[in-house]
Every structure is written in structure tokens, then in C-alpha cells.
Length: 320
Image (cartoon, rainbow, N blue to C red; front, side, top):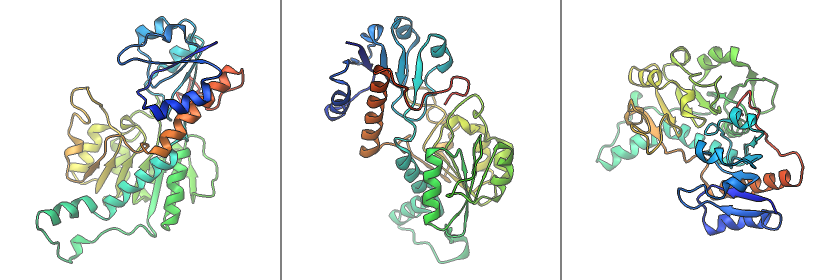
């Protein structure tokens, strides 16, 4: 019986999902804390990352399933050279991530965090023009990265009566967006937007895609929300944009560094700026999304074991 190595910290209910799908077709081995023992004899793995030392011993490994959309913690090209196919679970938590993006968007537009802090300090804002909140109806939303998450963001935006402009690598018309363009349209789309949601994966092409030029193209009163990957946005440029007033604010769920890295989540302190709402990469962390991601991952491994074509296979040359 083939072995499947699961390098995830899972509760019992999570293990039951995987065991229920794979238990009769494979020997499922769960990693012990800090140990990849068992990977060396596995033909498939469910994991976010594979340390080089562990991978060097995994001579039988042929399939890696990432239980989320992003595969940027794996060297997909190196795995492909070893004959290992990588698949993502993109779409499994798209609705949850989109809802979180909208939570950040609404919190910025309505100054929820700022006003909550003021009321708790005994401050009651006067009804003056400088205290106006921002309407969503009739506003323009730019969605940069129009995959499964981006489309769910657009769906929510339409419910609020927003105009949606989308940018994706391979543009094609979509009923949820008023416009879908390519990367060459990014500057114009940014210049028209009141809100910008970044939902891009991190690849060689997207790293630093949103830099000084793009941030300066945005309206002075606009907001940036990032639920894709931190490094898609240039950290120094964003810090300047927020502290110098190029844009009004940002809602960030993804970062440039993560614990235990020094300086997390932002060495420059973007998360400490008063016009930033920060969350710790939790956009997709709902019970329903977690179940969906685990279920999809186990079912996709089962497809591989049966000799079928897995879904969401990552193209090494593109990184997603």
C-alpha cells in the first residue's frame, strides 16, 4: 500500500477528514513535531513546505499537495526536476478570503477600528466634514489578481453596488466585472479605483508588482487591501505611500516576514501606522474553509493514487 505523508498539525476532527478519504487506499502517516521521518518512503505528501534535507531522502516522492492556494513556500521548479508534481487547493477558501478582504475594506471605509478606539477613550467625534465616512455604493473597486478569490471579491462588491475593474494575466470578459484587463492596464485601473484589493499569488513575475509607480497612480483618498501575498507589494513604497499621504490607508492580512523571523510582520513597521488595519494572515481561517481545503487535498491525492489526473496542478514555469 502506498504511503501518504501529512506534514500538518491537525486536530482529531481534521485527521478524520483525511483518514476517511485516504484510509482505505493508502497508509497515512502524520508527522511528529519537528520531524519528517516517514517522508522518505512516501509517494505523496500533503504539506506547505519541504525542507531540503527531508526532500533529499524522499526518493519515492512523486506528488505534493498544498492544502491552500499559495505554493510559494515550495521550490516548484526543483521538485519538477525531481519528477514531483505539485498541486494547490486554490479555490477551497476563496469565499472566506474574499469576505475577510471586504471586512478590511469596510473597516477602512467606515473607520471602524479608529472610532471604536476613540469611544473607548471617551472621545465623541463631532459631525463635521473631516469626519465623513466613505460610501461603497457607486465607488470603484480594482481587483488585482482575478482568480477564485478575486471573483468572490467582485461578487461581494456587486452586492454593494460597486463598479468593478479587474486585472489578470490572461484577461477575458466576466459577468461580475465591468472591465477585465491585462497587466498593461494596471496603471489606469489603479488611477480610477477608490479601493484596490490585491489577490495575487507570489511568483517571480508578481514580486514587487505594486511599487512606487503603482501606488502613486492611486487616488489620494483610496485604500489598498492585500489578501494575496505580502511581497507582491513593495514594503518601502507602501510605507511611504501611507506615511506621506499618497493613499488614505491599507488593510493587510499578508506580510513580508512571519514568526519566528526577525522583524515580523514588517521590518519597517507598516503594521504600526495609524492608517493601517492589520490581521495575522487569517483571511482563509474559517472552519468551513479548513474542512474544504483538507477534503479537496485528500481527494486530489486519491486521484493521483488512482492514476487519474490531479486537479490544480501547478505549472513550474509560472509558479501557480
